[in-house]
Length: 372
Image (cartoon, rainbow, N blue to C red; front, side):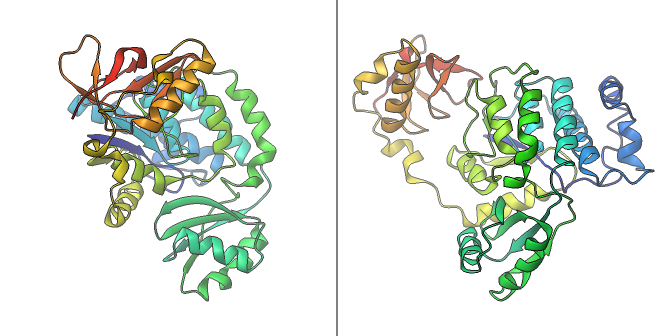
């Protein structure tokens, strides 16, 4: 199985998207019309030195990521089994999965970048060489309670976020513990409590956008699990102030059996993070179908699929008894199938689960555990 990964802020560079804008002139023209400036000019030449400004960086990355994805689809005709994006890259993952149109995704990213650029001025720093647990301990030991963890990027790379003075003062605290401390070239305290002032305005804008249910599982930054139908706007709102759980997201994908990770965008930041995560990865025992309790009868609640409350109980009961990777029998299919995700509630009332090799959900009413 394969997963596409879409990079976020920090991957931008002048020259990104070369040969892509002319290859997809209609999409490029659509982006220009929405943004009211030339995306090609910004990315290839950056004459006014705006590419490093959040309100320009985020739309530029979204467009280049989207064009990269279209180029790959044109060249290979393949479809990923999962998608994920780092921070603003998550909007590309949602567009790839059919949750949002290219146009609405760009409008969202444009508004997101504009609002984030107006949040209280802050700073961020990368802590390299220490585990996230140790980073948390150092923050607590030194009374640095005004600093949040913005990104759990890898087992030995954590990004912290806060006000400028706090991030500056934290540097010696980490260097005393042999941690490499790298202040980042950003103007805000992204993915922290300091984004809360713009959260309400962004939530209002999210309410103007139509979202569809994912055709491909999209792994959310906020909880490192697939997006739940009907929860897209809420999840994107929460993403502003929550940590990016990239380490757990990649571990989750590895647990699902993903072997190939393809970065769709400029640079190889995510590819390097995946390489680091895989070097420390140990499979989660519960995902192995050989030890899944699939031969036991399902709980009674699994056989109900009435209203919203019943659906929630059904999903909870199923997930307690049947981990991802369980072999099941599905009505209308001769061969046993294997679950690809945890069960979820669709449309507010329907309990369902995604299967390996199929781009769609199966109602739990039609699913039975199969003997090993």
